[in-house]
Length: 91
Image (cartoon, rainbow, N blue to C red):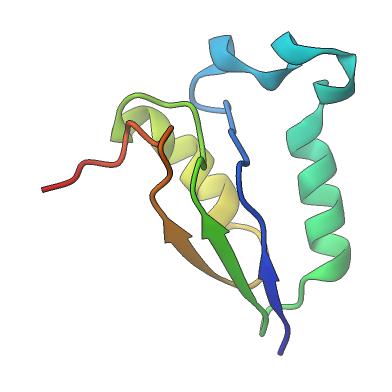
């Protein structure tokens, strides 16, 4: 088992108007690049720490697409709330 850490995904699958491509051409297709490298390197037995800024969604309903995308990637994920994770309700 390996332990990986990846933060600041800023996914926009559930909120396409916030796509990171806004910040320049190097961001075009960034989610596909993440997925490609993740699948190449992460084994099902690995642990992936995702310490925040998971997606740009404002509601959990919008975030579900991004969360399902993460869920479908290999490994066990541990997600933490980031300062841009407005969809993540706190009490």
